[in-house]
Image (cartoon, rainbow, N blue to C red; front, side, top):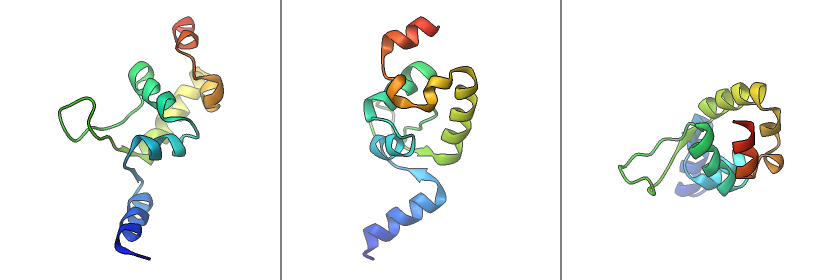
Length: 93
């Protein structure tokens, strides 16, 4: 295994997801869906820099805890395919 693959494996072992793509894959959704969840539902992602459009990271444990809490209130979030529309989010508010 090369150094970059080792670093990636260590990040995943530590529970660190280092991009929107990794966060989306962990939650079994699309990148735009999880970005919308951050914006509208408070998905716990962290930004190391000031710009909102900069890089993001998240911890698996925080995402699991958020998902458990949200799926109790909104069971459709357990399946990202049914939670992809903004109108659906507004209607439930």
